[in-house]
Length: 96
Image (cartoon, rainbow, N blue to C red; front, side, top):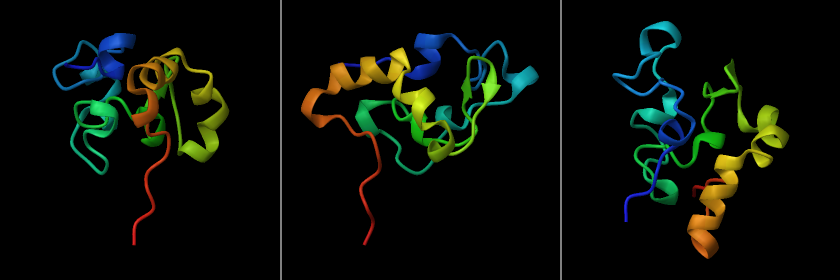
């Protein structure tokens, strides 16, 4: 089952070809990068809280450590958590 990504839920328009791409730039969660596909998203579209440079309420955000409280209260993060249940990934797995 296809899962909706952050840009589809929030209608931010920052995905490639989106309505606000030229104004605000492409969201780094909407392009390929580290942790693609986590929580069954396209690229990092269901792991956006871990991607620096995403926008929250129209403002650029920094790393997760700076935006953690805001993201934990985000309705989209809560939706992903509910969708994924026991498979939900909040933080990346440590690398060896």
